[in-house]
Length: 409
Ligand code: PMP
Image 1: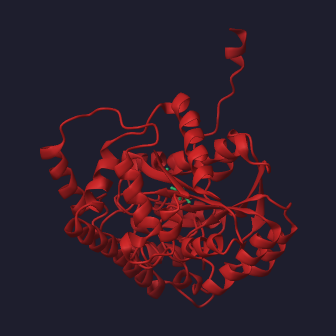
Image 2: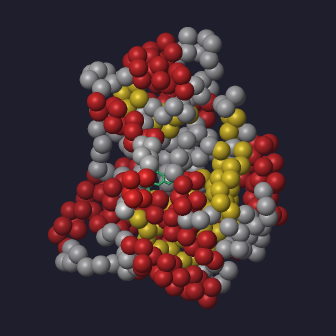
Image 3: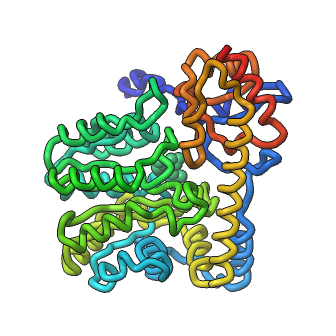
């Protein structure tokens, strides 16, 4: 028992700690730009109308709360696979792979759960035991991989001096990585920078991946947030499917989440898909995923996955969801532009704001400036200068721009 007295106090979570401080602030003008969750124009969280409808259907039709399978229901697996790899029929880049039974799709506990499951899977079965992730990346990535026993290292991604992608160093550091390393790629709306590669840049990176036999692990937490359409945001997945079919890249994996694009945050609904070299290899992988997940949490929750199944199996609901998502992304783009217009550009170049996409702006402000925003203006954001623009709306955009203009003076 003596050891229990030696348990050190762990530091609070960086992002959730900000929300706590925000709650305590009594300034009526306070703004929370910390957490990456959608807020509407009045600053409130929403339930997508299409999701509400799906829940109404479930309320009427649901006849059980039985356990789903270890990797979710077949219906969930099939519809998510069809949605991502076949674009619900609109793009068939993965159709052949699906037909050959080469894509294993499992329901997971949202995006974090899928990252942890693939990390444990790689620890067990992959020859390379290291992963390279972009610098910077989502604050939780490194902990997920290292807790699973992989070693994690960074590859260059962003040039903080110039607020731009650091593409030359990105290519160089990927080229310098050990052959066969696992490489984490953000499918779109890179978190935290919002800065993505162009299709031409992806081609160059994919050529290095092919040549060095790296294993691509794609994290797609913001599908739809770049263009407004989930079908347009899967350029990287489409290219990977093609390269796999050409035999240039043997396998890859995709971690995916419906937290943001369906607003299912707390329902913890996502998936892992592993693209295998053959149908029989896929069967073995699927069986091992079950063996891995069963002692961890037995099976995933069912409410969110039934919402997804309901939306994907009804053309009307599917269209409504696509429209809901488009309007969410539209609002974020409107406030992004508004904020840009109101920022003082005399001594500070804000053009990067317009190149960034998704839930965040990566302002380039220093930690000192972020602290000044918090202490003087009750504007709360992480000290790396990442602002979640979902906290910005018509009512507070002027106040926010004025505050930023003061701290950059
Ligand atoms: N990956 C990235 C890049 C993210 O930003 C997030 C959420 N912030 C996740 C994965 C996981 O999210 P969740 O577990 O809520 O699906």
